[in-house]
Structures are given as C-alpha cells and as structure tokens.
Amino acid sequence: MEYTTLGKTGLEVSVAGLGCGGPSRLGMRDDPQSANHAIALVKQALDLGVNFIDTAQNYGTEPIVGKAIAGVPRDRVIISTKKTLPAEDHPDPAAEVVKGLEQSLKQIGTDYIDIYHLHGVEPKGYEFAKNRLLPAMRRLKEQGKICFIGVTEGFVPDPSHVMLQESLQENLWDVVMVGFSLLNPSARKTVLPLTQKNGVGTLNMFAVRRALSQPTRLKELCAELIAKGAIRKEALDPSDPLGFVLKMSNAPSLPEAAYRFCRHEPGVDVVLTGTGNPEHLKENIAAILKPPLPETVLQRLEKLFDGLDNLTGN
Ligand SMILES: NC(=O)c1ccc[n+]([C@@H]2O[C@H](COP(=O)([O-])OP(=O)(O)OC[C@H]3O[C@@H](n4cnc5c(N)ncnc54)[C@H](OP(=O)(O)O)[C@@H]3O)[C@@H](O)[C@H]2O)c1
Image (cartoon, rainbow, N blue to C red; front, side, top):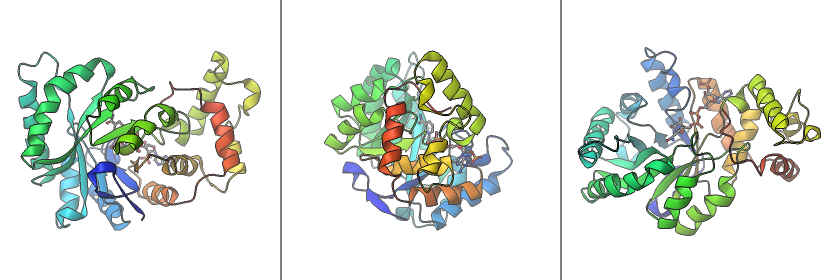
C-alpha cells in the first residue's frame, strides 16, 4: 500500500480507501443477512494495507466496521462517517447532529470519529448546513468527539459541484468528498484547484459506477450522448466505446483503467472503492497502486469527456 497525507488534517492515509456505501454496501444491500461476509471484506481491506474506511449513518454498515476493527489498535485506522441531514424544519437540527454522532460512536464501538461529514449536501441545502449544522459539528470537534469536519456533495443531483465550489470559497471544511471519474472529470477544473490551494483533504467517490463496470450500460450511455450531440459520432466505436483505452494501455479492464485515472489526478488524496466481492476488492486495490494511464489515452479521454459535467457514471 502507498500512504499520503490527507491535506491539513495531517492524517497519513492509504491512497485506496474502503467505501462501505455505494451500490453494494459491502454486499449488504442485496443481502442484508451477509454481515459476516461484509466483516470479512473490511478485514481483507485492512490486511491489504487500507487504513481509511468510509461509512455513514444511513448505510447500515457502521456496526460491520465496528466488528471488523474490534481488536485493531484504534490509531491504526481512520474512520470517516457521515450525518444524514435533518429536515430544514426540524425544531432542533443541531441536537440531531449530536444524536447522530452519539449513535455512530456506539455503532462503531469507538469514542471518537476521525472525520465526520455532513452527508450529500446539495446547493439548496448549503446555507442550512452551514448555519444550523456546522456550528454543532464544531462543538463536537472542540469536545474531541470528532477530529476533523467534512462534507460530501450530492453528486447525482449536483454533478457539476455547485455546492463544493461555493463552500470551498468559504474554506469551511477539513475534508471533502467529490465525484470524479474519467466520464466526469469536471472537478479537475472547479474543485481540485481549491482543495489544493487550501490544503483540504480530498476523497474521490464515483470512480466506478455502472457505466464503467457494465459494458451494456456504457454502450447505452454513449449512444445517448451521441444522440444529444454531446459526443461526435466519429469520436468512438459505438459497439465498444472505450475499447481504445484498453488497446492503447496495459489495463486489462475498464474498472482498472478508471481507478488508475482517478488515483493519479493531482489533488485526489484517497480513491474510495466499494464492493461486495472479495475478488473485486483485491483487483481494485491493485489497480489503485498501478502507474498512470499513458498520456495518449488521457488526451483522448480529455477530448471526449472534458466538456461534460453532468455525467455521474450511473
Ligand atoms: N454523497 C456521498 O456521500 C457518497 C455517495 C456515494 C458514495 N459514497 C462513498 O464513496 C464510496 C465509493 O462510492 P462509489 O460511488 O465510487 O461506488 P462504490 O461503493 O465504490 O461501488 C462501486 C460499484 O462498482 C462495482 N464494482 C467495483 N469494482 C468492480 C470491478 N472490479 N468489476 C466490476 N464491478 C465493480 C461494485 O459492484 P460489486 O459489489 O459487484 O463489486 C459497486 O456496485 C462508497 O462506498 C461510499 O462509502 C459517498
């Protein structure tokens, strides 16, 4: 494993982080009875040198993380978890933050959280998050119950990073989580320069979703983009749209290419990978540790997708 410093937090984190949410939730979404399998996945990640684990109040995987890290010295693992946003008309939203944190501590079986995020803040909820929730998080930080404060964007409703662009101007967060992939690299221009300038630790989500793991979905998506005029018809082969990536590089699969694409982006500290499949976990961590894609491939990808800031890769 390779390790890096997570911005101004100073935390030494593995460049591959385990995502315990996403479409698979460690396999728990399809099979909520598979707790032992999910615990084994977290332990596998730790054995492979991963020390960064991301979960959330609403994933149902906090207790899994707790069981997997029981017995691991607490300072060997960095726990990132998130507070689901209370409704804006909640009578006491700050108390909800405190309650959520206490629940997370209990579920994970720890007395502090390394990085506590507000989960999926959308542009329309930003003022509420900043004015009504962030002060409560600051108090929890002062009490030592959380070490650093983060925010994650709602990438599906906000794929062009409106919330992060605004909030990074105000420099409110120690850490942010941003959607970034070879299909939507727009954060390169709008978010990563700001995180780098202010030393904000940066976690990468959405490196691989359906379009980069299911060939049929990729073909459908590219056909849609061509039909809309977002991509020129001649720019790719509709029957194998990203075949050139594998032909022009030594990557054996698109998920591998997609993880390598993210890993070597300046400003990305940790690439998150989530799965219910132990083989995928092993391959994905190995991919994150491989060299960058060739420059020729990066240039061709840039020509294709650089102007697109509305794709999530789903
Ligand atoms: N707004 C937010 O705060 C937010 C939103 C989304 C995610 N997250 C966090 O970020 C983490 C990463 O999220 P993500 O959106 O990038 O998704 P993800 O959780 O990494 O899920 C990746 C998906 O791709 C599939 N996959 C992974 N490796 C594969 C491979 N080698 N071959 C084929 N399929 C593969 C997985 O299915 P299999 O199970 O079949 O491998 C899974 O469905 C999440 O787990 C979560 O912790 C946060």
